[in-house]
Length: 233
Image (cartoon, rainbow, N blue to C red; front, side):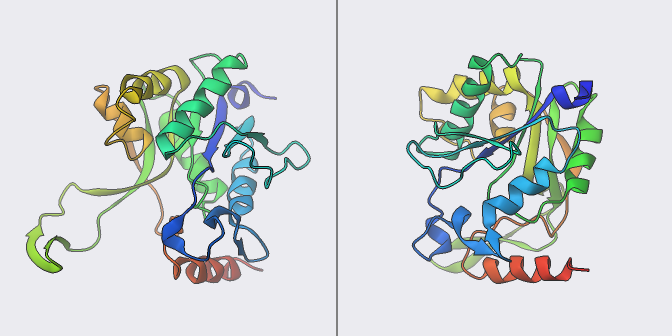
């Protein structure tokens, strides 16, 4: 294992139910292009040589996702929210001896279309950064504020970005940022960058891809299937 690989861990929170996606089954376990959605995600992360460890955090007692050929590890310490699952996953890494100086790349289980190239681009941008950062895209569309189901205001989109994942931060700094909000149930924290911002940091924005979508709604499964088919030789 290279020195870079020893310093980089991917952490995938995978304990949610994904109710907005419909279908009854947790969305991360629904099949897309012949595999469970999360298996596409984990395979992409495992294909990045500089990532030395892939940890997927599932709900307690969830035995759906068994490790395959040591490509990833499973920890059943997931919490009630994404932030809680990430916090518990970080604690699991620290309890296992991972130093606070390690980099952790937190990635949504439902962003199954991420590519090793995108992950490498984030690593290249953040590896020498004092804070770390996240994949994101400048907001391309007109933004509206709704009131009673109607458009009440058009908001300026200059300087606004759509956050994606992975989000890459030092293990100790991210654990501390989340721990500071644990007492109030991580209220208001929607991703790791928001926790780091609340702790006074300014994460680096690294341009992602429109294909790196988060499967959220029922129609997103068809979109993901189409992208996977387009990648076939």
